[in-house]
Image 1 (cartoon, one colour):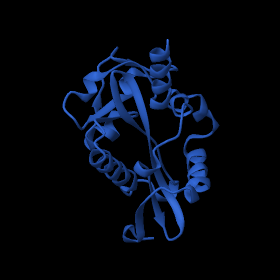
Image 2 (cartoon, helix red, strand yellow):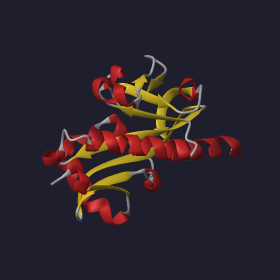
Image 3 (cartoon, rainbow, N blue to C red):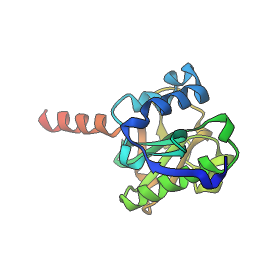
Image 4 (spheres, rainbow, N blue to C red):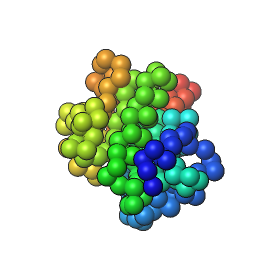
Length: 178
């Protein structure tokens, strides 16, 4: 395998079984109780802003983006990012993040947030979200809430509990109808 053989493509539904297998291998069944997964349960991810790395016909890594809301703010949540063990430490995950951030900027998304390790994501342009600005629907280490701001001031508009953007739209609709 050569890194030159790895291709980066937009995710399609045909990739779903392999992506699920990669995520299962990387995170195990415990991933379903994490705060980020609780948010993802609220609606679909943005397939047009999600990507895979393939070696031949095999998916070796993936990154997904999900629309989120927190107070008046809107953003994407990056993750899960997962790479098959044989392909780790080759820069594939970092390349997928860069591709996803570029796609988010082109789609005029104001910010991208994630739950992750600052030593990994910091060099990719992510910074800690100030403690207490946002909360998650399940417990999370607040030092792992990171954001990449695309539009100036976008991260400051994120406040309160993060939810899937579809759930925020439903809540806004109900409030208008009341």
